[in-house]
Length: 491
Image (cartoon, rainbow, N blue to C red; front, top):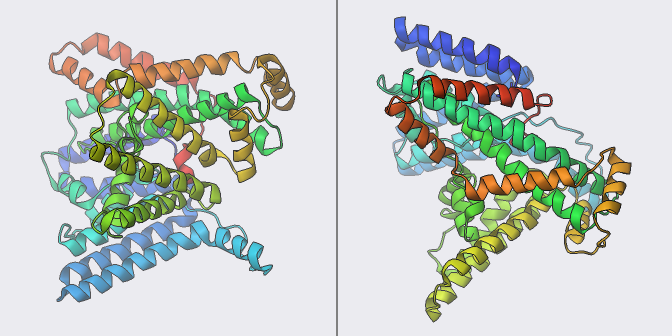
């Protein structure tokens, strides 16, 4: 079920909220079980075939976590944790990577494993990573779980289940167990509404608007069309803004929905395109995944404890695996390799600048470093979006002028002939300008909600606030051209 679907907006969520309110009033001890059941129903609405996998994963990891906590020795606990993580990764590997691995072996050896097409269970990457973090935290003594119902809710909690953010047991469980937190409040409903509407508008107005053009151009390049300089840059920029507004919109909606129940999910974005370096970018983009990769992979590999050479190797390995996590395609691995290389260059430059005591360049330096970071991110997004290396290199060639500088009108005519669009360039250029204005000149979601909270606290919300909310909701629903899934549902 999609957050931007009518079934969710006018069916599932209102009914779930009503049930939660009634239980809080008459049977508050049942609210966790009710919300866990609602979350399972939310999951099977999309596809009930893999409920067994979600249920099996929950039971298995719950039992592993209890066994780790009760283990008599650290060595026994370590073995249980390692076995649990290995089985989690095997399940993820089979569903997500078996076909990819078999196809690559076939290409290298000429053998035919005949694995066939394996359907990727929705949300498997997110609930697997969530539970791997739980097992590690249990081994570290940071997570103790004895309540099975709360654990089911922790893993299946519908606001985050399908596409994140990645949550931690140690931050969520105290909220689910607290009578003063895990409860409906007027403030939570007001702030949740603001967050949800910001995310909804990001998705159905902005992300879906950019998708119209990025999909057309990338799909054309996949079919052999070589976009010229202008069209290729429009495709790359539209996807750059599409993925930001799509995924950050989902996370805003998830945070907003959770606030209705009194629960705070972690923030996942902090104006990443304002980053002045790639290091800064990864502190702002998909923050929960960045934290997971740093804490459970980069540090586990040795981090920066064994000298700069080993540090750079660890950075590259971490980003390669982070790229592979996004999908079973060499384009994702290359995207990870690009970002790993960016991080190595960034850290090496910082070390050199510190040794040479290079001066700051002031405002000009800030603008230049932000522009260079954004340019590097765009180049990497081209391969993240491309369905093949050939398509990605065709797009990249166009961006560097290798496909010609035919000008606006010939490129428009060619793309119109292939894809049936008229006046292809004027609308996307205007949309790109709007996206840039929002990204660099406007406050982000957290800042907007903080302003809204000031109005709510000062009681200046009332009729004006309600009218604004209703207007935004109608605009978002009216702007939706059908119900489109979120990009990160594929991962």
